[in-house]
Every structure is written in C-alpha cells, then in structure tokens.
Length: 255
Image (tube, rainbow, N blue to C red; front, side, top):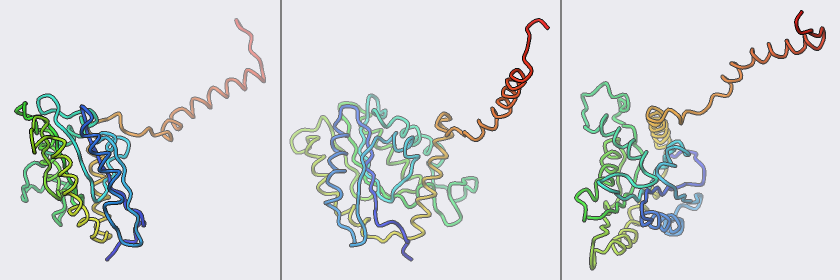
C-alpha cells in the first residue's frame, strides 16, 4: 500500500572531508541529483549536502530512504573533519551489533520481524584515501560495516578513490567514473514507491540513531524549558512577595 506522503522526496548527500576533495565530490553529486534522477509526475526530488556530524547533531539523524555518503580517511584510518562523531557512532554500532546473531534476544534494536536499527535506509558510499598509508580506507570501511550491521542496504559499487593512484586510477578520474556510474543504481531506489511500512522503518531509524547519539553526547539533549520554569517559578514568587511586602509596609534597617 502506497503511503500518503509528501510530494517532495529529499535525498541527503553527507560527507566528511579533510582536504576538500570529498566535500567537492559531495557538492557535485548534490547539485546534479535533482536533474539526473527522474521521478513520477506527482513527486519532486530535492537534495541537501551537509557534514555527517551535522546530520547527527542538527538534523537529529533524520534519515531519508536514500542517502549518499562521501568520506575519506585521515591520519591512521581516522575520520576527517565533519565526520568524527559519525565515526564514533559507527564504532559503537559495531561494538554492539557488529555480529548478526539471530539468537541475541537482548538486542532491542532488532524486532520480531527481523528489522534492525537502520532497516529501510539505502545508501551509496564513495570512499577516499591515500594508499601511501596502510590504513588509507579504514574510515570508509568502518562506515560501510556499521551501516550494513545496522540493517542499511548499500546500492551500487563501493567507491575507492586513491590519492596515490596514477593513470586511469588517478583519484579525480575514479571519482568521476563513480559519479557517472551510480545514477542507474540510485534511480532504482527512487523508482520504488514509498510505502507506509517504509516510512515507519525510517521513523524507527531516526529515533534509534538519535537515541544512540544522546547516549554518546549528553550535551545534545534539548533543554527542557518547562522544567526550568517549574524550578524557578516558586523562587520568583517568593522574591515578588518580598518586594511587594517592602513596597506596602516599608523596611527600616536595624529594626
């Protein structure tokens, strides 16, 4: 049954970039996406490009059904700028759910239907690195493994763009080939009608990812202004009462 969703579908392009190459590729993908992918007549396709960390902190991990990730490794397999918290989330996912054990009844992120934390999310992944370092592809690999372990489905080839590549394997050429070849795979996702079950799965992915973020980053919890008002309201009433008393009856110091 098709869901009665909005006529606008958004595709997020998320990136982490140390030198700017991943950012440039992500922005190129995002700008091309609405024109490269066709939709049914009653839908409009839009795209936004942002840091992976901003997706978590500012968007509260609100997954779209199709997400494109462009990310490099930095240093000894670490996450680059804009992807360090996302990497920590991926590391935590692998620590908790890295092994698909159907007998693990304690895993409350997998329901009786077999759905996992990110079931319903489809992603394409382009990784960048430098094979001069033995850990050059560790960060994209960690992202790939974590998303897969959490139930997300990768579409298309896992892109591997090596900064030390030469000739036909030069990094910029690999990036261009990956971008040119990924559209058919992305289109196959967009062509599928969004169902109510799909929307429920995305809602669950959003809620459980955000819950994990709040476990890891306590300062991300929104301020409960109602609780603060309830805390300070009695104190404010006392102060107002004192001021009214002084105004009506006066006060002489030393009496």
